[in-house]
Structures are given as C-alpha cells and as structure tokens.
Image (cartoon, chains in turn cyan, brown):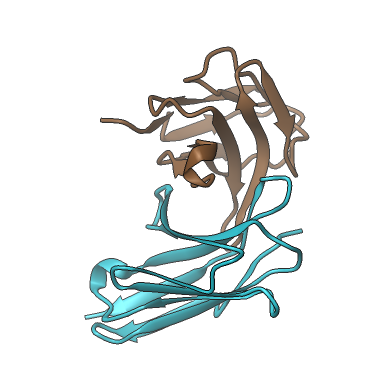
Length: 110
Length: 113
C-alpha cells in the first residue's frame, strides 16, 4: 500500500492564484520530497524537507512539514500556465526507499 | 548533457513475449530504480539497485527481472509471467550524498497487443 496520500486529487485555478496541496503519510520518515510530472514525462524533483525541518522555500514553492500530524503541504504562489502538471509527494522511509502518493493534478487556467 | 535515458519511448508486447526496457545514466549515481505508474495511481517500486552486481525486489517485483552489470545501466525485463504489463515505466537514479533525490528518465509506455 502507498505511504503518502495527496489531497485534493485535482485542482483548477486561475493564473496568478496560489495553489495548495497536502500530503499525509502513515509511518516515520527520514525526509519528504515533492516532485512534478508533466503529462507523459518523467518526474522532476522540486524540493526536499528533512524530518527535523518545519518549512522550506524554493522560488515560488513553499513546503511545510508537521511530523506530529504526519502531513506536509506544498504551496505554489502566483501560479503560471507552465505550473500545470501533476504533483507527487514522496516519503523516504527508514529503509531509504521512497514511497509515492497518487498525486494532485493541477490545472492553471489562463 | 548529464541525465537518464530510457528507451524505447513506446513498446508493444505480444502475448507470451518477454520485453526489455533500457535505462542508462551518465550521472555517476550508485543507486538505480524502476517504478511502474498506472493511470491515477502513484509510482510503485519494482526493483532497485544500490550498487553494481546487487539489486533488491521492490513492492511489485513478480513478473519482472533486472540486472546491474554496469554502474550506468539497469535494464528491466517484463516477462510473460507479468499478466498485466500495460503501464508507464520510469527509471530513476540517485546518490546518497544528495539526500536520495531521484533523477528520472522520460519513461517507457508499454502496451499489450
């Protein structure tokens, strides 16, 4: 079974708006990562947050991690058409394997 | 350019046939992985290799086989024992020193004729 679950499954926003998606997981982790996948392509790493970190920024991306609630959120600010993609959280477990959620599909409307 | 190359991009398998998906990386990464992606689902780990000449089963290894004879190469064979092979297959690599961030290839879409 998959460790992480993203919410919502799909999100449609207007260009310029912010997009927020959440990830919940079940067991203790070493770190949590977010990836983006454009249709029919491979995944691209966006950001990694370690289990002892609470917040991390990278450009227009902001990731939070709450280990007590076993959850993380990804915020994309000032969205652009190019942000249209599927976003996956991946949790690195104690045995160093990455477990992926089913993803959130984000559509940015012009 | 450094990266991971998967080939072919599209592959068709006939009933009872084994097919091999290629994955080559020039990133000098020690670890390599194969994932399967079905529509609307996340990635599921098939096999992974932390070092040359060694590999471990992932969560859904049945019906698949791999080899890791060279650091740069990690081919995946989908055998006739895999009854539902239609999926998007992704190869990835990583280096422990980079926090196990995965670098992915562009994928192979396998379909059954």
